Length: 212
Image 1 (cartoon, helix red, strand yellow):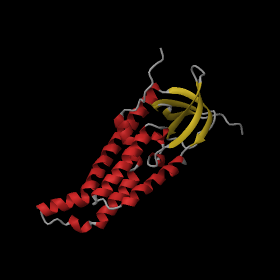
Image 2 (cartoon, one colour):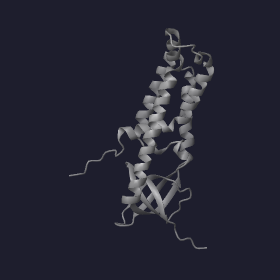
Image 3 (cartoon, rainbow, N blue to C red):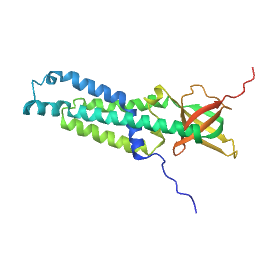
Image 4 (cartoon, one colour):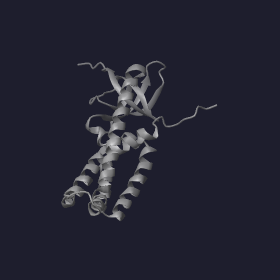
């Protein structure tokens, strides 16, 4: 009987990765909304009009801020756990072939342009339109290899597509890794830990011998 295959990333972890991937866009959207309607920040006390104005002009911003905070917190927990597992239970592999995939994040940035069609977050129509677009993007994102294609993560980590050989059993496989190492090469030895299906976190443990 074949073993059941499933995504090892729980929904919360995938949600956090998705939210983190859009942090720069969320910052731009919130800054633009607050700056454009800054006159409503001067409440003059709690009353019906001030509360209604806050909900209308800054309700969406508040939700985005809360979601962003949850996403960042979830990502920090996820990466901390993965790093710990990689150090204690990582699988040693040797890189056979490698390709830097950080450039894929540039393509991903083009999805940032979509919400700019609906800039005013005080309009219910615009908020719903952006929400629908983000939900559709989320469903595609979490069910594909895009899960590690993340402009925010790429500021610190590097994304690679690799072919690797398991040091222990000599089996050769392909996968995508994120790592803090910027200049991996063929022949380098890594410890890898599962993040998702064919997706791994990797630590460099031994550089390849290069003949001078």
